[in-house]
Length: 83
Image 1 (cartoon, helix red, strand yellow):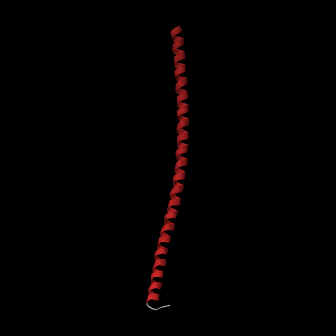
Image 2 (cartoon, rainbow, N blue to C red):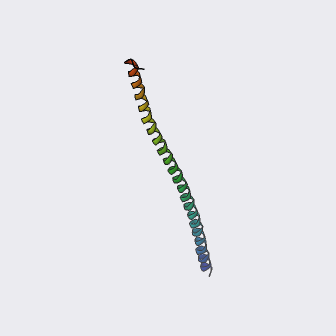
Image 3 (cartoon, one colour):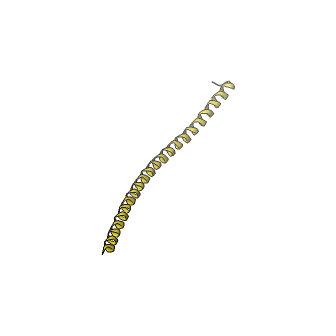
């Protein structure tokens, strides 16, 4: 009868250890998923900000080219005797 008791306690111990690791793994997976989702939210925010800056830079580049062209035109007019 001693072997049966040892086997019973062995099975119970194995079930407890397996259950503990299953719970721990589930928690780690959930924590990892939560962290992953937070990271994705931050990256999405940064992507939006970079796109906003890109649009601003493109707009500024166009304005700068037009502004420089206006200065060239003014200098040309002054060189030709204009006001």
